Image (cartoon, rainbow, N blue to C red; front, side, top):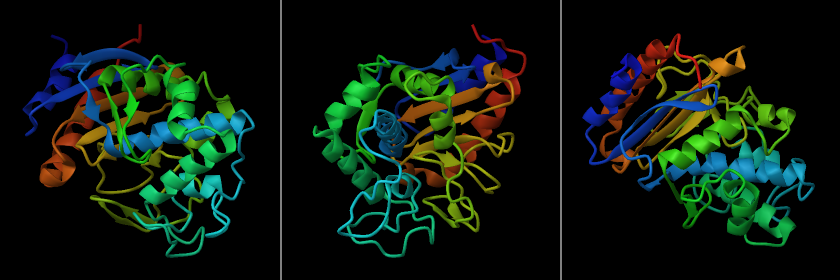
Length: 287
C-alpha cells in the first residue's frame, strides 16, 4: 500500500458506518478507499452540481447571470443566488436583507436558481440537470430526489467524474468555469454553517472558496484558492488548484452519518485527512 493509500484509509477510522473516498490529481483518480459504487446522500455538495447545470444554461443562452430570478420578491439575479448574496435566509421564501449585503448561506437561493433555469428552459430542472450535466459526464448513479440544494444521491465514482469536469471543464468555457470558483462579491462577510462566522466569507457560484477562513473544514495545508463544499450528510469535496493544472489535487469523502451527530470530530478529522493527503500527494504523477 502506498503512503497516499494509507493516508486515505484513515477515513476508515471515522465514527461512521460507511465511508467511501478518493483522491484526484490533475483531474484523474489516483487513490480510492471504500465502495466507489455505493450511493450516499450528497446533501449540500448537491449545490455545486446544481450550480454547474445553471452555468451550462447560461452558456446555452437559456438564462443570463444577470437575469432577475424572482422579480416579484426582490432584484436578486442568478449570480446573486448562486453566490449566496441574494438576501434569502437559510430556508424560507422571504429575503431577510437586501442583495449584496451579507453572505447568507441559503438553500432557498439555490432552489430559486434551479426554478429559474427550469422556467427559462421550459422543462423540469431534474431533466435539465440530467441532459446538461449528468449524462454528458456519465454520472449514471446520480439522482435528484428533491431539493436541488441538498437532495442529490450519488457515488464516489460519479462525484470524481464531476470533479474531473470542474478541473478540466468540457461543458463550460474556461472563463465561465473559472468564474464559478472565483469569489463573487468578495467583500461580503457571513457564516459557514457548522463552522463559524467570518468577516470575509468568499464564495463562488455554488462553491465555497476557502480564502483565509480559520478554523475551517479543509486542512491547514490547503491553499486559500481551495474550493468545494461539505454536506450535512457527513460528506465533503474539495479541489486545491495550483499554477500547474496537472498538479491540482482533489479529495472527496462520502459518509452516511449526519454531520450534526459528529461535527466536533469531523472538524478535526477532515482537516487531518486533508493535510495528510496533500503531504503524500507530492511527487505522484497523474495517469
